[in-house]
Length: 231
Ligand code: SAH
Image 1 (cartoon, rainbow, N blue to C red):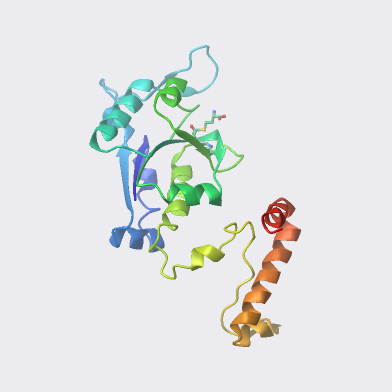
Image 2 (cartoon, protein in one colour):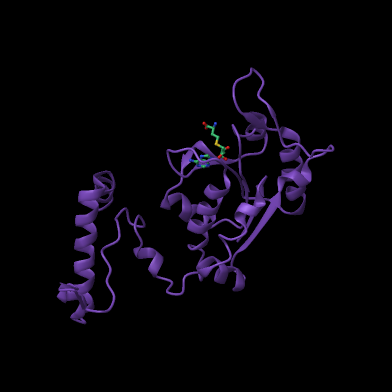
C-alpha cells in the first residue's frame, strides 16, 4: 500500500514513519509513504501557497493552483483509490474506516493549513474528507500521520503477530482488556491469578468479560453497538 502526502510543511512528517512498526512495514515492502512539498508546485518568486480570503476576515486560505498542480502531477504517475483531505468537518476517523482504507492500494492525502484549502479543491479532487476528532489542529500533517499509522498497521503482515490487531480496542466494538507483564507481583499489586493459570480457555473468557465490563462502563455508546451486533 502506498500513501502520497501533499503538505506545505513536509519537515513535520520526517519522523513519524521512521520508527518501530511503520518503519518495519516499509522495510518489508508492505507500505510506502512519500511526502511531497506543496511549495514545489507553487510558481512566482515567493512560491506563494496561501492568499487572503475573499469576503475578508482573519486568516489565509490555501490557493487552488499549487494544490491542483500537485494533485495532477501525482495523478499522472498513478491512479488513486482515494484523495483524502484532512479536515475537522470530515467524517470522523474510526477503526471501521481504518479497516476499509487498509484494503486500498494508493491513497493521496492532502494536508490543510491556515483557514484550510480553497473550497474548489475539495469539489474537484477530493473523494473523502477525514477528521481525527472534534478539535482543531494547526495543520493536517499530524492528522495525516495518525491516519497512516492507524491504517498502516492493519495491512496484513505488518504486525508480527497477525492476529493481534483483531483484539485491539474497537475491532469488535469493544475496548481492549487490561494487560500485564512481569513481575507477577509489584509492591503488593498482583497480576490476576487467571492470567498465570496457563488455561487459554479461562484466559480468553476472562479477557472477554473484562472487555465487556470496561466498554459498558467507559463507552456505553460502543457497548450498545456491540450488543446490537451480538443478539
Ligand atoms: N478553519 C478550519 C480549520 C483549519 S485548521 C475549520 O474551522 O474547519 C488547518 C488545517 O488543519 C485544516 O485545513 C486541516 O487540514 C487540519 N486539521 C485541523 N483540525 C483537524 C482535525 N480535527 N482533523 C483533521 N485535520 C484537521
